[in-house]
Length: 173
Image 1 (cartoon, helix red, strand yellow):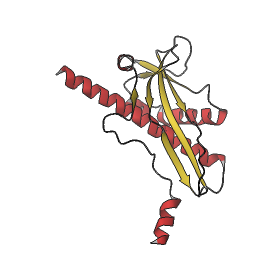
Image 2 (tube, one colour; image 1 turned 90 degrees about the vertical axis):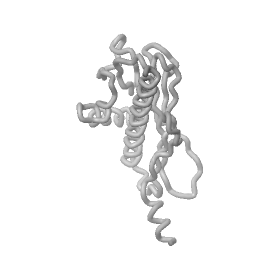
Image 3 (cartoon, one colour; image 1 turned 45 degrees about the vertical axis):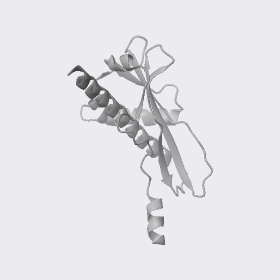
């Protein structure tokens, strides 16, 4: 029994998100969220390593078969003035909690803003990715956790958009 517990602790844990069946995030302005037609993903305020993680995610998931293709919005590659009406921004806030184990935690959250507005119209709940017994302490492990967090954050955004669309269709019927 003891060895089973150690084996489980060696594997990365799945993200910890609330199990609300309706939405995985917070729609703060439903009318603005419904009216999104184009968006860009902004990484300019992130530290260079995190910006690189976002850029790699865009390279991998931004094509027609990637995860971002599941959003019904048109993605604009640059977030310039007037280029789009919506900006999506990922953040990886750090919360260092004391732990008995050698582990690495990465938190992630995704915000959606109307261009020019400082207040988000949507935000995901925070996702926690953890890798128990991270001994290497290397940059690669942190980047892998951030990539996984970003993937789950975008899945939450897609789920919430689909759920909102279903709710609107049901209300119209």
